[in-house]
Amino acid sequence: QVQLVQSGAEVKKPGASVKVSCKASGYIFTSYGINWVRQAPGQGLEWMGWISTYNDDTNYAQKLQGRVTMTTDTSTSTAYMELLSLRFDDTAVYFCARDGSYWDWGQGTLVTVSS
Amino acid sequence: QAVVTQEPSLTVSPGGTVTLTCVSSSGAVTSGHSPYWFQQKPGQAPTTLIYDTSYQHSWTPARFSGSLWGGKAALTLSGAQPEDEAEYYCCLSYSGARVFGGGTKLTVL
Image (tube, rainbow over all chains, first blue to last red):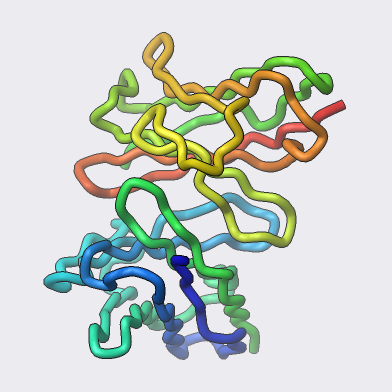
């Protein structure tokens, strides 16, 4: 079955960067893109962007342009999301979700930005 | 960037029917927006209920259905069950960029 397993929780200081991984299994990795979505504590879902696992095309949310980078490693079927210049309001659970018709979701990774 | 609006909260009686809606600030919602509906329970990752307006995965309970109605995307729950109490999010596509609505907290009471 399709599984997306994300890396563990992170605590970062303001101004630092974080890189979250999302390891896929149960399907052909390059057949579906990956969306990244985050959720601040007690808040709704926010789409961060999408990456093609086939050719690494990306589409980032305007709000995060310049601070977010999405990449993939097809040899390990893993997608990555790196967020730079972290701010306190970047504290959130970060999810990856397999694109295609039906989205399959990772379990989420809590990133806490704290001084 | 467009803003997507949902009812903040709704209440439905067990066995009852409720419709959640999803409005786009840029105009009528169409199939071109590829509406998705997700369900999220506290402490869990979201799950996909409906994709591309009205399609369900094989394990989506049949009591959930999606449609376009009056220029909005709609999620209808017919025969609400206690386990349907959750947050529901719609998500629309704008030329490939996705925007989530703020979510609807559905109470079954």
